[in-house]
Image 1: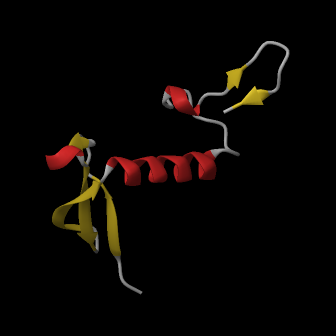
Image 2: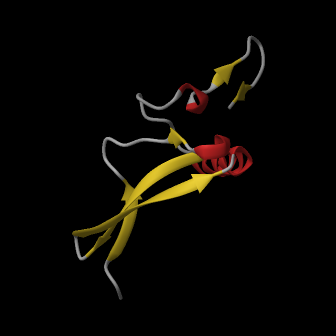
Amino acid sequence: MTDWRIGPVPGRGLRRANGGELALPLQILHGGQHCAIARLELTPAEAEQLHAALCYALGEQSPPPDAPECRHPVRYPGGRQRY
């Protein structure tokens, strides 16, 4: 088993890239040692698909207090709760 890890770069969030794409810097670690930083580039359509997939996967879990607004339930008067 290898000890490779890929994750967000602390302090460097999602940015707009050329052509309207979105770029997320990711750090690559091997054995806990920094190896490189790479960018995950997504078109707006790919970002929407990823957003929908993450919302679906997280839907059963209660959002933490600092979660983005889109993760908090919407309550409709006299209706059922929707996300």
